Length: 71
Image (cartoon, rainbow, N blue to C red; front, side, top):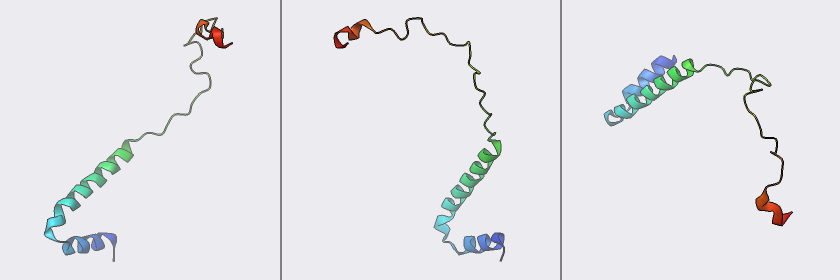
């Protein structure tokens, strides 16, 4: 039995009151499949690509005056 035939047989055997849930689930699966198709692979990161974009102050490592009591 093919998967399509099995699916058709199972659909024919479920009660009418569950058809809405089956339709919702099939819509979810279609949405999930479309989302997977649109996903692009991640680009490889390049080391140093942000070089020169940020600048740290010269006294970055200097102790803060607020903590003089603790040093």
